[in-house]
Image 1 (tube, one colour):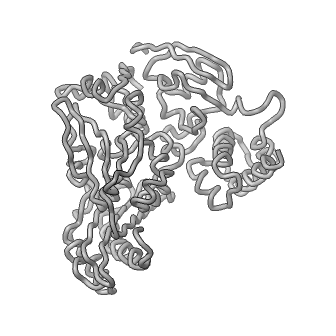
Image 2: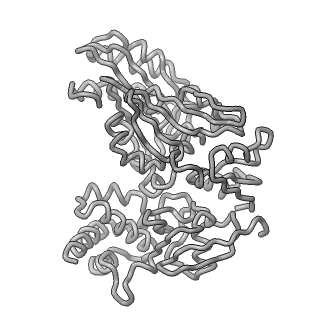
Image 3: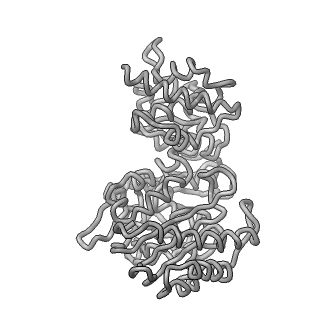
Length: 291
Length: 160
């Protein structure tokens, strides 16, 4: 790797102060699993990295507040999130999705904040967090702001974060009786990056869908909601025709791109099939509380 | 080479050590170049194969994707550090007894991940083993023997 300089601030505020809105050669590093890959291949050659590893430990914690909202510090390693009982209670889909995200060693090190700020459309948690209606607390030189995860992604490896902003925390709102699932289809090994990732969250009223949130990753240029699918599900009976219509709507709405894991045409079929399967899976979870 | 230097101090296989490194160097490089430890070796370079596995503060990491600068103050264990003198660890013994290797290039990573797995789950079934070791690749294809080795290591650890 090309040489660079390294700063190791002890607070989030100091880290933000070391970033520079006008200098993209200065970048943060958290777990570093993605940044190291980019540096090794020479795609990314920073002048200076700002390590976030020394910042306050509260940014590595997972907790649930009185309202039932799940707070995940941005520096929380994915493996800690996977093992968190608080997270498993609040939104079990997160743990299930994490089991097939890369491997144990990468999850030991990679952080949730880095996972999101990387902006790669192939990652697993963006669609999950979008379907759960999660938001991010962002800290920058000019103060704090909150952004919905669905508004975070702007393009391939591009996010709404300014170069001098950092994700401090992710908040997953209390899910109540909503149930969610994440389906990942890989065309290589089971824990590879997906050819398609799809997350569906449904509020059920008996045998009818109250409201739906649907998001996909890996097939489009950014992780994104599929609002036509949500509309096709809302207020409908949980029947085969509903699932069929949802699948067709998903295949029609998504602007699909080819990549090394599948052609656009193949991925469009995957979207049709996996939308159907995801809705069916939630239906088959039964009524045993929030899942 | 150039670039910023840093002096790091850490515990390596139970011994306090220090090294002057470039902040852009990865941990695999530093273990090899500064300490002559070649058990962790870079193979895929992408975190997929597990050949460069080391334990940092008791947690398995991909050392070729870790900046050596982050090892400052840490407790690092490599494959060279898990035997007790001439007495091999339960995991090492189990891999030898089951013949769970051919060329041996991936074996240090498999053994360290096995140790970590058994620390978390003393009695894993085949699914748990395959899930946990999915990030370790054996190009000789010794996977059936590796499954046996992990289960034998679990028995050996229980027998103490």
